[in-house]
Image (cartoon, rainbow, N blue to C red):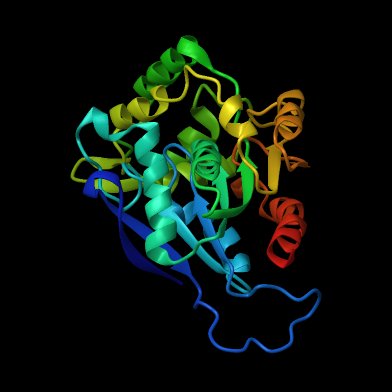
Length: 294
């Protein structure tokens, strides 16, 4: 089970944070394996169009020993969706994560981010090293993607056959029929089913596609190597073998990071933690052990 905690983000935007498990209380007593900081905080940041619930499997095993909180970022999930384009800046996303760490008392925390959430995580770590003790970057590129990529996304949104009649239709379209799907991918269909809500005419996304495009255009045209080089905490770069982050770029990111490490997950695409939760855990948990007991 997860309990909701409200957070006030940049510009007063209301954000929903979800804590999985009860925070450790009192003397934890002996534990198996290496001694750990059982009260250490972990903040989980989803990617564009994602939501906190996508982190549930990860948060459950994290919460056995740590305080795990997943944030619905602005425009996503149960958080507020301000109508103004000016609300979806890089600075706003970073300030939201900063506010969450401070208001929830998680810092210094390990911040785990997927895709856009990973960019937010490393920009936060560069800006506020006092708040971030470790970082996990999941399938996010540091290089610029450019105008063609943004146009492809705008065109892709227009192909969505909204509204969907049923959630089964959502799963089938995103898992099989979507022109971006190279081969059937049930986990991708399930991922997108989680971001749909029932409306009077059928199932529609909980987010506004135009707000997602606005969020994306604030980072897609720029490279982010300089901020990556400013991250001083231990950082793990994780990629799926069939994901969007190529091996050469991932290894260059590790080289640029002052304390970077590398891991990859077999049989995983872009949705690494969702595609292959067991492989994801095997890749991430040893790194967390080192950071949280070091």
